[in-house]
Image (tube, rainbow, N blue to C red):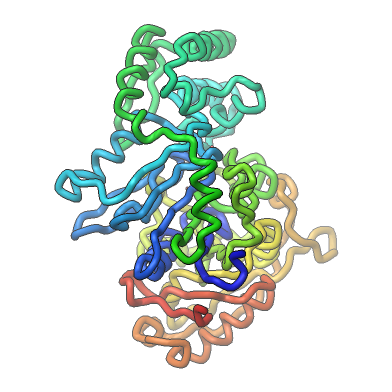
Length: 456
Ligand code: IMP
C-alpha cells in the first residue's frame, strides 16, 4: 500500500544519543507539511530525552515532546512504548504554549496504554543508585523502574489516570514504599528531580501523591486516547497523511545492544515502532529509516568507557565548538573518535536503511580525522559486543583521513560543492557502516544541510 507513495520517515539515534535527530526531523516535517497532514509519532523513552529547539529567537529544551511540536496542524502521538511523567509533561506543554502566545499549534495524543513514570520511580532509582555503588549513569527520570513495572506486571498506564483507578494508584505507592523501605530509604521524604534545571520536590505521603496525580489527571485527560484505530486508519491513507517517527535515545543506549550496563530501558531500534503501535505500523514499510550519527566524532553521557575516548585537548575543543553538554542533565559529554565497529553493529541491529551525518563542520585544518576501523583483543581482530567489560579490554585500530575546510563545507549548497576530502570521508564511513548516507548537516542553520538522496 505504502510502497510507492513517499509518506513516511523514521529518524533515530545511530550512536549514543544527542546526534542531532531533531534537526533532521525538522527537515522532513517541513517537507511533508507542504501537502499532507503530518503525524509525529514517538514510540520510546520519556523525560530522559532532551533536545533544544530554537523558536522565534527563544530556546526551549524539549523532553517528552518531540521537536515537531511547533508544526502547525500536526498531530503529535506519544505512543504506547513511552513512559510519561504527568507533571513534567504538563509543564512542557505550558512552556510550548507560552512561546506561542498561549496557543498550541498541534493536537497532542497520549496513547492510553503509555506507562506512567512517576516520582515513585525517580525516588526508587535514586535509592537503588546508592545501593548499586558505581551505577551512576541514569538521567534520574525513573525510566528504568517505570519500564520494569511492565515486566513485573503492575504498570500504571495513562488510562488509569483517565479512568481514575485510585485503588491501583494507591497499591503502586504502597509497593514503592515497601521497596524503598527494604533498601533503608523513605519514600515520603526522598527528593526527586523535576523538569527544568535544579527543580526538586519530595514525593510526599500517599495522600499528597494521590491528590497531586488527581489534579494533574484533570488537565491531562483530554490528551489521553485510545489511538490504535486512528493509527490504522491514517497509516492506510498515504495520500492524505505523512508519518514522521522521532525516536528517543539511540541504539548505543538500547538495553540489549548498547554498552551494557550503562544503557536506558526502552527499545531504541526501529523495531520499537511495531510494538508501540501494536502492529498497526510495520517499520519495515516506512519509506526511509534514518539513523543519525555525528560526522567526525561521537559523544556520550554516562559512565560508559568508550574504546575510542579522546583524552587529549581535542576533546575540549570539540566540546566547546559543538556545545557538547547534556540537554537534560547539563553534564559535559565525553568525546570519542568515530568507532566504526560499534556503529556498524548499531545500525545493523537498529534496522536503519540510511544514515544522516551531522556536525560535518566540526573539523580542524591541522588535525587528521581519526576513525577506528576495528578492535584488537589478544592479538586478534574483533568486533563490537554490547558489554562494558569486553569493551574496556579491546584496543582500537585507527585509520587517519585528511581534514577538509570548515568554511568550504559550511558554504556548500549541494553535493557537488562538498570538498573532496569530505566526499572521500563520507564514502569511507558509508562503506564501513554498510549504509548509504541520506543527508549531512554542515552548520547550525536550517539551510546548512545537504541531501545526498533525491526524494521521490
Ligand atoms: P536513563 O535513560 O535515565 O535510564 O539513563 C540511562 C543511560 O542513558 C544514561 O547513561 C543516560 O545518560 C543515557 N541517556 C538517556 N537518555 C539519553 C539521551 O536522550 N541522550 C543521551 N544519553 C541518554
